[in-house]
Length: 293
Image 1: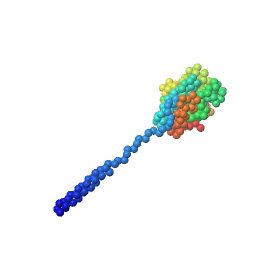
Image 2: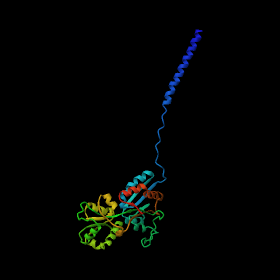
Image 3: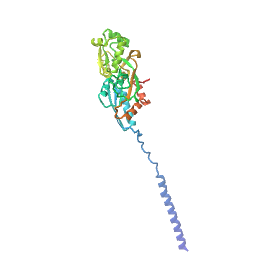
Image 4: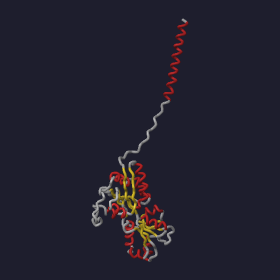
């Protein structure tokens, strides 16, 4: 009887220990469970890839350089390569066969000279480079009269400039005749009935091959004033003393188009669409551009 009682007690104690051991081992297993670490989100797949070669007017250098980074970040497979120069120089390079996907001109004339759908009086060579379905008026700029620091000649308006030029008492920097900003300046001189040739012969005019060269001449104080875009004046920190009116030189419209010879037309079209969107528009407006009406 005693042996039976002892055996029963031993069985009861062994069961209790097994139960406690099971409880002890199950608790840590439960508390050890941790939520899975969130997976990193990969950049959205846009389907775009390759290089986009953009030929653009020099006056867009700062803004387009900034927008390149944001577009490439959103499209990891795409690389943008820029060629900045005067619109006339870029037009000639395209005509001569340079690789270009997207052309942004500072004037309609240079775009029209490459567009078979433009007036034959402008596109005199019948060039057919522009994909007309993509051509848009991208931006509007303003022609401004700027002076170097201190404004030594006291030029405060286009009216004052015209009088000083008539007196032969000022040195003006302007773009060459094949540069849009130079063509706009020629119209301003004609508006005031001033002869560019006579002024140049009298030593009252100096030239730049693009708007950046004119801007540099004003910044360095090697001239008394210069006619440039307000966006370049903003970027260079120059003082603007007057703006040209549409009556003086017309509207300053920047057309843009993908070319028929583009090697990467889909990506070029996507970038052009991006340039018309809110993010790019905010960057353009920050330096004085406005969306073209």
